[in-house]
Image (cartoon, rainbow, N blue to C red; front, top):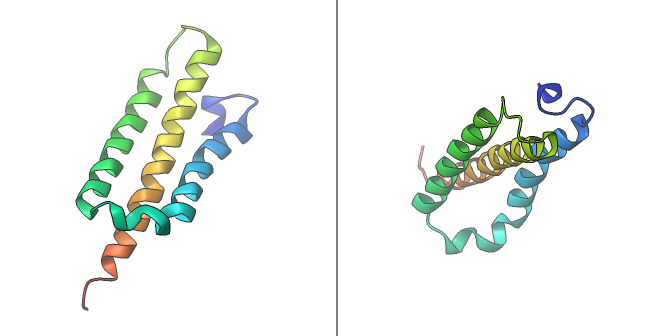
Length: 99
């Protein structure tokens, strides 16, 4: 739930969740042909692991409310990046399959 990350900043969580995926989707045609499918999936896997780690390890932090919020939002943004990259890569790869 977005309120678990930021009480009053639900819009911040929404932007962190939508923005990176949208940017990947819009910019993909310009750089996807330079990066192999294997490397893109490795980047997506790394992004998801980082997303889980950033949100989980900062769930109970008392190092300062703004610092903890920043790390949680970065974790949400990494998950969004992973989602956009993985979706676009796998859709492009599915177009190469005969079926």
